[in-house]
Length: 146
Image (cartoon, rainbow, N blue to C red; front, side):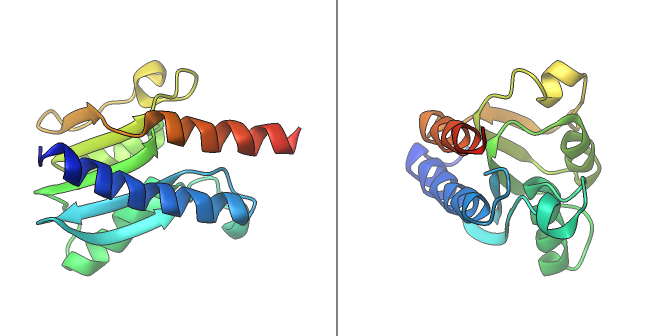
């Protein structure tokens, strides 16, 4: 993995996406896809906006990155996401053959590890920086919704 400064830099960009989601009434999860130290896809949850349960940040970022690259595989790319991917997103990441997944906050209830999801065997997984900040955004969002 790139040096920790890079991981923090890219995770901050994902957190910016999560904040946009929160401001729009979406569950605040953000993601960026990086290739050669450059962001090639960025997204946040759009499930409410699109009325689509599959419109998770990871799914949107995968689509944006694949469009940028002109192909369906994200070999050599890294996904930075503010929350551990769910099983559905893990499946999409598996098929995209993303090289690396770096997530901030764990999702002990719905994360792919808890739900039995799998990533591609060659995909590296790291719990990255800024987990506390990502968790705080989520907690604040749900506190305000209750």
